[in-house]
Length: 396
Image 1 (cartoon, rainbow, N blue to C red):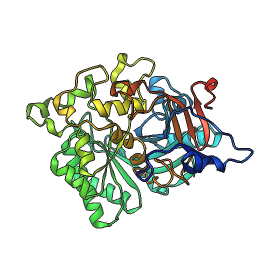
Image 2 (cartoon, rainbow, N blue to C red):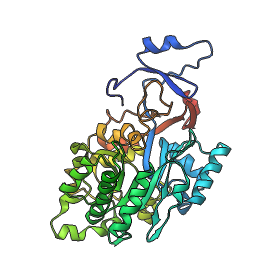
Image 3 (cartoon, rainbow, N blue to C red):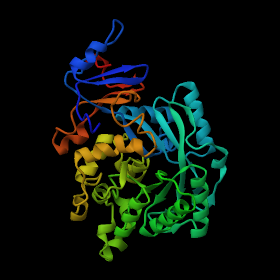
Image 4 (cartoon, rainbow, N blue to C red):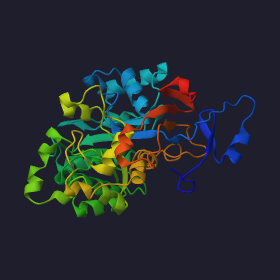
């Protein structure tokens, strides 16, 4: 995923970091007598996938997963980093316990809530922005909910939202906001614009989460403000998720909905995620044995735009399809940018964390319909194998 070196043959890892990437002739001579050599037999390696908006650990118990099982489920799918988007006091304590015990086997960015529905919180001010507890746990930002129930309920007056966003921004926090409707984006973009005007910052990277309904002027405003669009490619999804859109359809405003291609083409930095386990909760009885939450399934959704239940995509969805390369960036290089970690994650380059995944097939070479069938054979975090599908292969 490096623009200057999009393909390579070999990679060297030492002490949890990548030390070299290049041809066999460049890399293999670096091995010494204690170096372990692994021949992948032509299999594909990518940077470890980054789930930019999820609740794997915090809400995993709603689908029968303890935190430890949720971590295992994420690793099994090829995720090496996840952004937990609602980490309250109790959940932060639990993450720290998992980290201290060595059970936090992937990297977690914690986002502290500013509100839940109409309840507002300010305890985040007791913490330091981007505080690093360990290489596996850091405080990434703060999270607020502008609207709820697919844009039918709102939780802030403009004055109150302005004050909270400005306080967080002035204190150095990255702000993320659950924003579904165009009305919610109006309110949130106004608050971000006023915060940046009052306290200029050249690289604040405030984020809008979900970004379901977006007008042209709002898309342009996001670009001008240097904001990030955090999307789930499968949305609007099925059943309950579609209930929020009839009014837009009736008004002929289909072009506002889930504008993934428009966002990427406009230059708005766009990052991808699963919102796990909420997609399982939305699907209800149709989601058996947690079949969802794979990064390759998310890539498939971005590239083809069908529903999880097999509904044929409509023309407005097909116009917003991404290429495989664009979709992969949502979960690697651009996702790392979304948490200010492009210096250590998102691409395979010397000096970065040795977070990588070995896949059963090359997503850029298979038929599109086969993307969902690609498995994570091995997931490596900091040079350590944290998931191995089959030790007999010799890959791990």
